[in-house]
Length: 314
Ligand code: BDR
Ligand code: CA
Image (cartoon, rainbow, N blue to C red; front, side, top):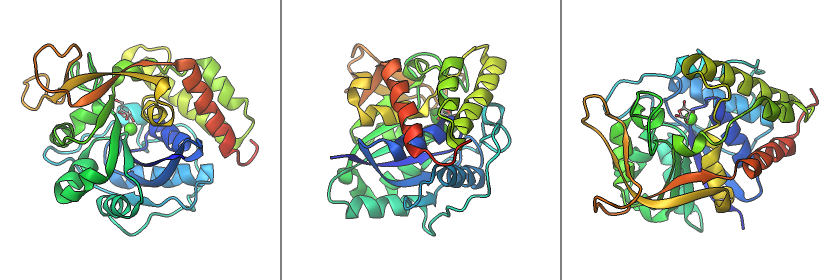
C-alpha cells in the first residue's frame, strides 16, 4: 500500500522536483501540497506550486497556501539561490491548476482527521505551517505517522556558517517541531549534499524528450549556476527530494538515532541544529538523522518519476 503523504513546501527548484517525485512515485500517495513563505514570499511559492502542477499534469491534489511569515522573526527569502520568482530559469505557462480556499494548516488538520490511517508529513521548507498545526491542533500529533523533513545539518550550514536555510528561516517553528514528540526524520545538508546534480544527471532529464524533462534540466542548470557562484560547488545538491525518497524507500537513505536541538540564542549560531550523533551528552533521542544516500538508486527513482509524468514532447 502506498504511504499517504502531504508535502509542505516553498518551491524552490528542489521543491519542484520533490513535488514531481511525490506525485509520480507509486510508493507514496500524495494527499495534498501546502505552501509556506521561505525561498520566496508566500504568493510566489504558491504560484510556483501551481506552475509545477500544471506542467506535470498533477490535478486532483489540493494545493493550499499557509503562513506568509515565520513565527517570530521577519521573513528573509533566498532570492540569491532561487531568483526573484523563486523558480528562475525555465519559462512556465500560465498555471491552470488552482489553490483551494482553505488555509494550509486547516487543510492538513482536516486530512489528518479524515484519513483512515496516520499520514506522513514531508516538510521541505521552513517549519512554520507544521509548528502552527501542532500548536493550534494538538489532536494532530497522534494522526501523524512521521515527519520526514528536509532541513538542518549534522555539520555546517548554508544560510549561515552554522545554520541551514529551512531551520534558520524559522528557528522557533523548528524548535516546536523537534520538541513535539512526533516521530521525526531529519534529512539535512550532510545527506542532501550526496545528491549532486551533475551534467550527466541533467542530460538524463533532457534525454527524456519531454517538456517536463527539459524544464527539470533547466531548473538544475540554474541551480548549478547559483551553487557555483555562491559556494564554488560545481554540482548543486538536490535537497528536498531526498526527504521524499526516504519515505518512498527507506533503504535509499540511511539514518541514525540522535538528539537534535535547535539553537535559538547563539550569537552566531541561531538556527543551527545541534546533533548528538553518538548519544554522548545524554539528551533523549528525538529524531532519526539521515547520514547516507544511495545516490545512484535515488537518481534512478527521480528520473523515472519525471519520465512517468511524461506530458508533451519537447
Ligand atoms: C533548503 O533551502 C531551500 O533553499 C531549499 O529549497 C531546501 O529546502 C536547503 O537548505
Ligand atoms: Ca525547499
